[in-house]
Image 1: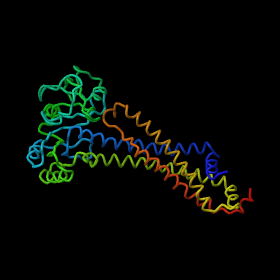
Image 2: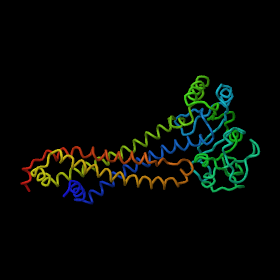
Image 3: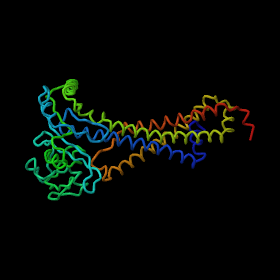
Image 4: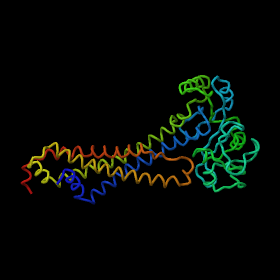
Length: 371
């Protein structure tokens, strides 16, 4: 009988208990995969949307809400005159319910600004002018809202015609209702207000030069903060709160898994007390006993981690199809997240086995004569 065989036999001694322990670990790791994957996916989806628009710098006032706070549209004129700024586009982005969809991105863009130019028409046309009562829908938004060319979409109290279906080159763009900025300002009562300015830096600027330009804008414009496009969402209070909540909830689920593994290993040590004593009597070193228990608990963690990754991935794929999420983000289910999740499960298993392993090493060969 090999060392590995002893470890496997120990786990399968009580298959129901081992199975329930694996379920506990799997649920904890599934929470890590789902919650962290969704929060990271949210950041990546918005970053890809900015990249699709060709945005180098984003000026916004990101507070605790998911959408930035409004500020005066005159800020755009001040920024446009700063050396190093090649182009600007004022935007008002809102996350709101539209008809049967509980959350939809409304992206109102400065008429003629560069943020319109990445939109590829799939059908229909673009609005004729800035005040035409019309919208274009990203292809995912059209699917969620069940709209086609010629239908109407109600925003606030106004009905707008759907004149085009577009491919924006990124998930967030394709999940948006897009219209002109002056029209939305009038509809929402935000005349003279915007909440985002997309900036294109002078071509050829390095990353350090872009950061220096952000610092210059922040010195001149106190109303909002300029950041490189890829850092904007990740540094917002709302995203940090969502990320912290995701990890916090995952941690609680993992702690439950720790307690489950520790209980299983303690019971295993108690039930196998005579076997462990015999192993000590035939010459096994106490370090080998400790290693045996730790490897058993690590294997529990590893198997639970694999199960958690599978459950979490399937769960996220199901959530992704829900109307409330569909078209807003693409969860991060990268190989890196999967490896981290399984590694967490293995670490949980090892930590959970430390005390049971220490208890097993305290046994003496003479106890093999009892029972």
